[in-house]
Amino acid sequence: MNAVIPVENGDVLAAMRGFLRQLLETGVVEALYVPLENGEAIVPALVAAPAQLAGANPLAPVMPINGARAVSALTNKQAPAKIGAVLRACEMRALVELVKLQQATLAGVVLIGVDCAGTYEVAEFVKRRAWGGERLSEYLSAAREGRDPLIEGITLRPACQMCVQPTPTGADIQVHLLGADLTRGIPVTLRDEIAARLGLSAPVGETADRAVVVEKLIAIRAQVREKELTAIKERMASEGGLASLFAACLRCHNCMTACPLCYCKTCLFKTAAFEHKPEHYLSAARRKGATRMLGDTLLFHVTRMNHMSASCVSCGMCTSACPTGIPVGAIFSAVGGQVQSAFGYTPGRSVDEPLPLITFLANEWAGIGEEK
Image (cartoon, rainbow, N blue to C red; front, side, top):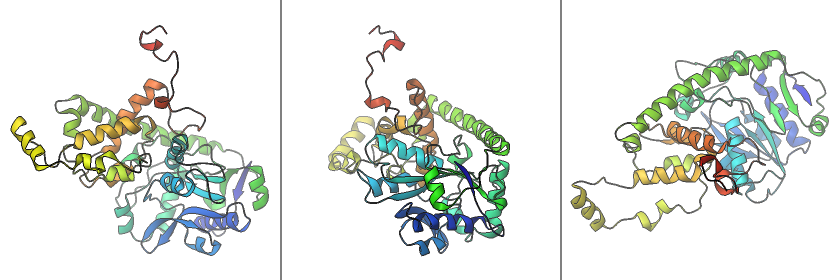
């Protein structure tokens, strides 16, 4: 059903905190995964005590990790309790992929999806210290009007600038920020039984403003996405190709660590298989004339692409984690988009949609000339 979370004195954040507290106090959930304020930072946390939600800030425009990683750690094969999870759209899509990869479960999990107008890099966010008051109001105003929230000259993360899926789908509770006058109340869509337990009964329809604003925002982001991915594809096709794009790679593996879909407990690239003896490097240098130190960077990235390009949700956490500024997210979005298009697959759309790379169809080669 559609309902509205009451907002008093224009304090949207206080209303959201009260709503989350209700979820715990009424037993809708037993614990809640939500961002908490910790001094100047926002940290992902699992909250079991309602009083701790006084520091919750699900509206803060920052994403220290893709929350799908946390929900995977909390649930894995079976959730230990009734867990609630406050997630942005890209986090929800990544979680859907992890469920299909058997790295998480939605059984016993209440998904709380929040519209996202974009996020800032963590370092930029922390520099601004406080994100309440006027800064939060400006961010929410941007969400209402369907524009990029430019605050004190900082820009959104690259992935957010070209995100064409800012609204979550498939959540048990969906919080609608885009296009809404939040000072009058926060529109939500939620299951009837949850609304009844929370005492929410004031219906509001899906307003025309929301549809218009979402469409406007997606159109703006789609233009940026087309421009960025076209540029990346041109660089991939130019002399040097992928090797030149990843030339600055330090082999730190930060992108893999930040990626919500790199779930292997033991990675081949962190084993003795890539701890080469000195003779290996010397032999390569003599054979080629020169060899890179440390090597295997391109092999690392290509292997990651092979593993997860079909499931890449373009959250851009890899780019944010790269210490040398490689546009890892744009590269993976470009490659992933081609893979996903080939299979007619949209990652994170539905848990019922089979993963293409682990699903065999008897006629899947017919499209490229093979009869049966």
